Image 1 (tube, one colour):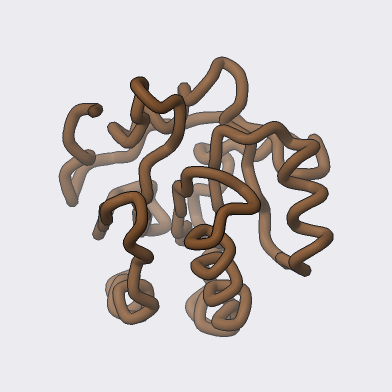
Image 2 (spheres, rainbow, N blue to C red; image 1 turned 135 degrees about the vertical axis):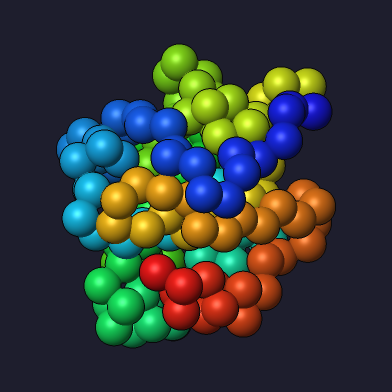
Length: 154
């Protein structure tokens, strides 16, 4: 397992990852915008699909709060693009494929034994400061109410 999550009140570490279209997304470049960062283990898995479908259905919550939703896994950008098209996800899916899991490691949510990002989310304010985080067991989805509550604090 990895180290603990970054502490609330800390400036989050930066990263640059390609989205499902191969476009670079720089976390540092999103300062001035709230961000919810959602790490998930694998595309096409049952729990991940359910979680991201729920977030897609609730995308108005994020838009109304002026918050950018970013979902991150260690899958390739090609896998993420196919999955996003199949499922109709209307937000960025970021590939932490290479160097494998580097962003997940930076956030303390990379499982090196299994080679995947753990199920964790981070609510980051406009100044790049972590306001809230949640980590659940691999088979346990994060509750939508956590996102509602976190958005209120952004």
